[in-house]
Image (cartoon, rainbow, N blue to C red; front, side, top):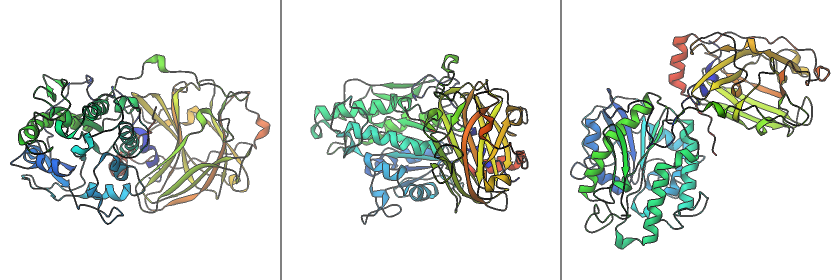
Length: 537
């Protein structure tokens, strides 16, 4: 049980593909019924969210409990310090979501969110706390965020304040964090509308356009296919009696008329939604929440599988048709290596081209790692299109290391995004890699199917359908794994285009122990979660 956790990072990810728009017809029948067990949920909000939760207003808190959700919430004054004398709970405007989900303090803030079990508003909780972390994170900005400047069709662009372009930019950015936590379900609640007297027709039209984009286009434009993000259009529900976002007759309905303000469902004296409007939202939201929960819990695809016509032969780099990465600018897909690691104290991993050592050229991929016992880290190269490597007999690369005996794995993800397969080869850094460069060549037949997948242990047989490759570094059950390795000249093996004179005699691959037993692997998976390789268009 020394290795195997690193591969869990990507296993549950790219094959979860289907329509990215939450309004699209699902591939399986949606389930609007409550979960069959208590699920922990937290709601990040301010005053209009507080009213929505209240028993004598929107009744959301009671309704969530009746649907088997144990509810906690944040409000003004909640949470870790923000840095200006306030707390993070004071900040829920659209630009503030970058602080929550896309900052150097995100881990601290999210730890507090995941572990909050208290109430910061008044509502009835009829369920007992089942323990553990919050699984569903709902978050909402308040009605001033419907006073958007700019134009309805403005593209995403970083800026200041509340504009259509900056709002789109913020939501695009925070998707990266959501992609890293497929073990959590994130529910975006759109900001409620303003009343007509408190906004201009232009700002109201901007609010309508932005919320339509958020519901219909946000995920699709970012090619986001995980089922752990969904949108409830609170704004739309409150803008008129015939404006709805609900689940009816086995389908999700999102309809609206020309109204862009809350004349119908506003309080009489301000922009807070009325109790009538909040109760309407509660009635429409709960079945939708159940649908989104079951889609996420069941791992349901959210967009159709890739068509066969999307599989392409990769473009060959000029003069080096079998080169995958040499880290000198001749790399397939530009060598966009990304690092992922378990959230264990002491873990560190960097994976970048460096010039302090190179087998050929001026640079190699330098990986510095310190992976705690029972944890994992991976360096992953993702491709924009499915790769056809059937002309090669395997992978080859040059390896230099800080010491021999460092365990690592080479991982190939293949198949199609809706039916992904994982193949691994385990090794230890050889003695000859410490004083120079060892040449490693791994035939396709030495990559074997992951233990947790159907056909475990079978040899790799789909080199024409490669999705990505990775190098993994795992801690053992009772010891950390730390060191530095340099990787250079990753190529397809078995081709005349690869010069054998460049490299020393290939070294034995130094296979390590096998994957953990299935039971232990599932336990570790539950502890570690999984990470999706996120690509934005």
